Length: 114
Image 1 (cartoon, rainbow, N blue to C red):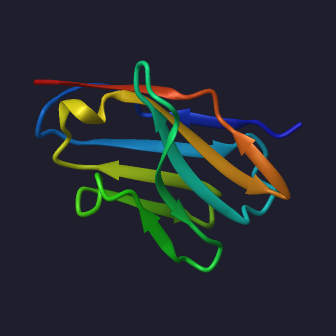
Image 2 (tube, rainbow, N blue to C red):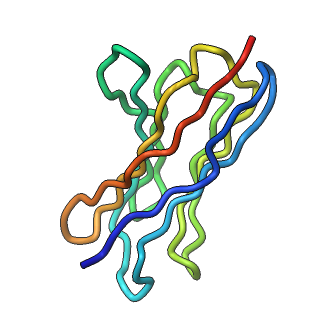
């Protein structure tokens, strides 16, 4: 069974940066498309950024210009570079990889202090 493993969350001050990483537990599988989502306390899960297999990206308005989704095809890894972080970015961030079906990671917590 393929699992999605995320890493890179943590505590950062406002204005700082973090990079989240996501990978399938078995690299032999090809990723069709991918995305990052987040869920703040008491809020519903929301889309942060997505990337198609062809490389087209889509971002939530709240993160445009600050966050960048990217992938390393050779290592089958997906990244979310987060710059100029704000306290409102505090949330659990989830990675979704479509490997035939949508697979979700367990989430990694990002806390931005003011």
